[in-house]
Image (cartoon, rainbow, N blue to C red; front, side):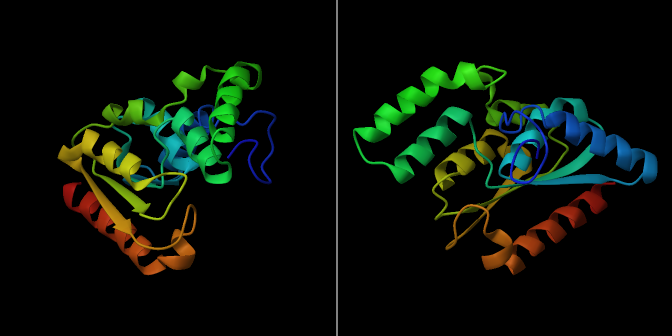
Length: 190
C-alpha cells in the first residue's frame, strides 16, 4: 500500500490512489495468466483500494474477498478517535482532523468512501466480507451494512475474537476456508 508501513510513497490517501496499483496488478495477471479467473483479496486499506478500482475491473475480476473494509474515511477516523480518546476529546480531535484533512489529503475526505463503490461490482461477481465482531476500526455493523448493500451476491463471515488485521493469526482456518469457498464458487461459474 502506497505510503503505508514500509512502502514507498509520499501521500497515504487510504487506498484511493492505490486503485491504480490494483488495476496494474490485474493487467499483469491478465498478461501472465491469460484466461484465468482473477479473484481479489483485500484487507483493510487493500479492500478499500480494490473497491475504488471496482468500476475499472468490471469483466476482469470474477470474485472479491474484503476483510475488515472501512466504509468511509470519516467513519474510520471517528472509530480511531473514539478508540483512543474520551469525550470531549473524541469530538474535538475528530473535528480537528476533518478541518485539516484538505491540507493533507489530495482528495476530499467525502470522496474516500469505499462503500460507495460496492455497486460497481456486477451482481454476477460473488463477494465475501470477512469481519471480526471485536474489530474497533472496521466495526461489524459497518461491514454488515456494506454486505447488505449488495446482498444479492454477497455474504458475510463474522468471527469472534481478535481485532483489526489479526485474521491470519487468530482465525487462520476460517479465513483460508473463506478464500477456498470463494475460489470454488468462481470456478463453478466459469
